[in-house]
Amino acid sequence: MMALPVRRAHVPFRAVAPVVVVAWLGAWFANLPLANWAAYELLGLERGSHFGDAVAFFFLDVPKVLLLLLGIMTAVSFLRSYFPPERMRAALAGRGTLPATVGAAAFGIVTPFCSCSAVPLFIGFVEAGIPLGVTFAFLISSPMVNEVALVLLWGLFGPGIAILYMAAGLAVAIVGGLVLGRLPLEKWIEPWVLAVRAGGGATSLDLRLSVEQRMRDAWTSTQDLVRRVLLYVIIGIGIGAFIHGFVPTELVAQMGGRENPFAVPIVVAIAIPLYSNAAGTIPIVEALLGKGMPLGTTLAFMMAIVAISLPEFVILRRVMQLRLIAVFASIVVAGILTVGFLFNALGI
Amino acid sequence: MKVVEVLGPGCANCRRVEANAREALAIAGVEAEIHHVTDYREIAARGVLSTPGLVIDGRVVSAGRIPSAADIAGWLAE
Image (tube, rainbow over all chains, first blue to last red):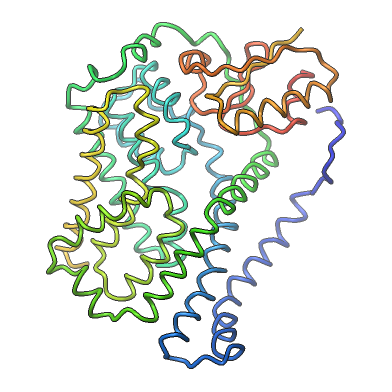
C-alpha cells in the first residue's frame, strides 16, 4: 500500500490490545466489590434495605452492561466481519430447502446485518434463486438471535440461558422459514423484485479487508451502538433497580407465573413497541427473572422485543405486499408464543 | 477519468461514504465523477447485499461498512 497523509495518530493494535484486555478484566472483576462499596460504604446505605439494594443493583449493572457492550461487542463485531451477506448468499444458493433454511438461520447469528439493508438483501436472495422461506428464516433469526441480546444474556444470566435462548430462536427461525416456504407467497412480492432476476452479475465483487481494518470497523460500530443505546440502558437499569429493590417477589411470580395463561401473550404485546432496545430491556428482564418470573415468559418477552420490528416491516413494504408482511409477522409471533408456553409448561 | 459510485438509499451512512470518497479524491489527486446510486434495482444489479456500498470503475470495493478516506484513496490508486 502507498503512504498517505493520515490525520489521526496511528495506533498499533498489537501493542494496545493486551493493555485493553487487562484493563477490561480488571474492571470486570472490580465491579462487584466497587458497586457494593459505593452503595453501602460511600453512600452509607443499609444492606438489605429496599433503597440500598436498588442503588447497589444500579451501580453494579451500569458498568457491567457497558463493559459487556464495549468489550465483547467489539470482539463479536470483528468476528462477524468474516461472514458478510454476500458470502452467505454464495453458501446458500443452490442448496436444498432444509439445509438452506437451517443454514440461513445459522447465518442469522453471525452475519452482520442492519434492517436498513433488508431490501437489497431480499432482492439479492430472490435474484440468486434462493427460496422465499430461506430468506425469511434469515430475516427472523438475524434480529432475534441478535448479538447484543446474546452477549448481555450470557454476561448477566450465564451461558445456560444464553444458549437456551439461541436454540429457541433458531428453532423459531427454521420452523417459521419452512412454514413460510410451503405457502404460496410469491404472488405477494412486488413484481419488479422478481424482474431483477434477469439482470445483474456484471460487476466484480472484490472485498478485501485487513485485520486492522476489521478491528477499527468493529470498534467504530461498537462506539456507535453504545452512543445510541446508552440512555435506554441507564433508564432500563433504573427500572430494573426499582424492581429489584421494591417490587415484592410474590407479585411477579404470581402475575408472570405458570398459573397465569395470559402472562406470555401480555409480555409479547408489551414488547412489540419496545423494538430493538434489547440493551435497555435486558436489565429489566434480569430483575424480573430474579423475582421469580418463569423462564418461558422471560424468553418470549426478550424475543418479541428484538424480533418484531415495526421499522423493518416498513422497509420490507417496498418489496412485498402488506399481506405478506402480516403472514410473516403472525408466524413469528406464533413461534414466540409457542416458545413461551413450552418453556413454562416444562417448568425449566 | 474514474467513475465512483456510492450505493445506498440515501441514509446517513451513505452520505458519510460519499464525503469520504470526495476527500479521498483530493488526497489521491484523482479526477472522478461521483454518482449516488439510490435505486434498489441498480444496487442489486451490482451484487451488493448490504449498504452502503462503493464501486470504483465497475469494481465493488466495499459493502456494508464505511471505508475511510485513506481506504478509498488506496483503491483509487490501484
